[in-house]
Amino acid sequence: MTNPTLDTLMAHRSIRQFTPEKLTDAEIHTLVDAAQHAATSTFSQQASIISVTDPAKLATLGDITGHHWLERAGHYFVFVADQYRNQQLAPQNATTTANLHSLDKLLAGIFDATIMTQTVVTAGESLGLGSTIMGSILNDVPRLIDLLDLPELTFPVLGLAIGHPAEQPEHKPRLPQDLMHFTNGYQTITPTDPSLVAYNQLIKVYYQQRTTNQREETFSHHIATELSRDPQQRAGILTGLQQQGWLQG
Image (cartoon, rainbow, N blue to C red):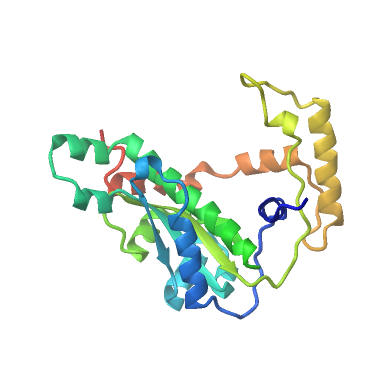
């Protein structure tokens, strides 16, 4: 027995090359509708979506992320943690103000925006679309806030380039489940764990044999490279959060 939902989830891969075809208004409406039906903390619906269609703004997003290929996607979404809307709906007093500016509500908005993003990815893939989630919009948070005219108590969480795929990359192997799924408590691993050693070899072969951007790489080396990045690259995240009214207590 086949399960189309599981088939879609298991077949996921990031798409960075798109055909020139733009998404239709109907497709955009369907994807946003799917996002609205995602799980939301306390039914407070603490996220918003911005469609970026202005070529100049898309070019700026390309500058911020360092990935100008996003300008050739069929559509571009930015998912925003949003307590500003609920601020307008709630009576203004010391309790509501403290709650809206709290770390708890910031996280709730981030959770809602993140779940929305993945929901749109899966909905899009079920329609034959491909996409890439882009955390690189956070490379210059103050500039992004200005670009999108974000009011207080909002924060950009993720970007999503989505469209009709012009490529079909190889499927990237994931960690063995025994390295990330534990029972009744966390289980530590070591660099010599047999499952990790085997996975490193699997990833090495994957990078050697894939069609594009072949290189010598293991998962452990990849993690070491990621953690070697200059932490100042995204130093503006904290500044942006504080600018938007978060983490000021």
